[in-house]
Length: 363
Image (cartoon, rainbow, N blue to C red):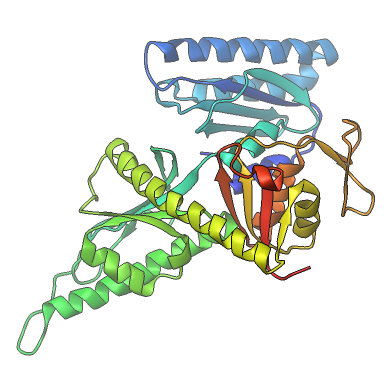
């Protein structure tokens, strides 16, 4: 599934020709039967263009990478879309949890604008399942879960209460030993989650029996990222069922957090510690002063960046100073500075010209 790490790697790529295939897909039959057919059509479109511009031998590696990626996609288990990225020395397929516009692009760089927009504005989060035998982590978008299988996950509890037996004997409290072993195990889990959060900070929904949830809350350094909890034994809950529970928990928590963000914005206005409108917010984000960004879901603002970098100018649509959407750039800067983002329905922030920020310090 798409992540900020994957996106950064794609954006760093430079090599002409580089091919991007973007295709919206369907999760179930019979609609998904047409997905591979349409994908092959887009690949043919890209290959035809390559062969018009280059001798076949010069782009044979690109063409073979494209065709190999087509064969690798599991068309029976896609999400909202698929992106294929191919160049002479690069081939990758990314499952997209959102729909994209169908197209084939040949350029020096991979086409990532749609991915940036969706990555910033699609409700992404992580689901951590605490279990005595093995704890698992999922990347999630709405109610769709994708298990994180890179090491060290899933994490297996090898101590007392996990694979090892609880001790017995005079004066030994098995429950106390078990609880301490669980806390040590949960610290290991928390360290692993923290490393992922450093690269791509997301809300976290934690699932587990109440005893495990309480122990994890005692040891975690991710308390401010926890957006919801799902009580119960979910070590064997199928991802489809777990996704529905986690999404409901996240939505409940997000409603409260968005309301709190609006309250903080009101307090910041009284304290002269806020920015309203894209021009003020852009300047504050450039200065790394945005603590909390509030933005309407559908707000986009094409613009040129002034030479000093502190101002936005009317969009020319040409050259390196032209931004397809200054709002996406603001979001990236606020996240990079450790700020938090809240999205609202269009019209909610009308008094602030659709975007506002609570600042770390006043003007």
